[in-house]
Length: 64
Image (tube, rainbow, N blue to C red):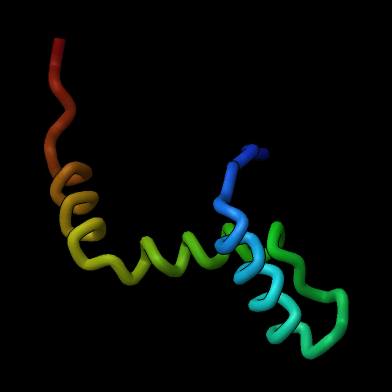
C-alpha cells in the first residue's frame, strides 16, 4: 500500500539524520524505507494497542 504523508520539517530532518546514522554514510537507508518498520515496531510494542486488538479479534462476529 502506498501512502502520502505530510511531516513537519523537523520530523523529516530527524528521519533523514536517523537514516544517515543507520546507513553509516551509505545510501542503504532512506526515510521512506524506515517509516513502515518504525511504525510496525511501535505498534508491536504498544501494550494498549495489542490488548485492544486482541479483545476486538476475540469478539464473535455478529450473525445476521
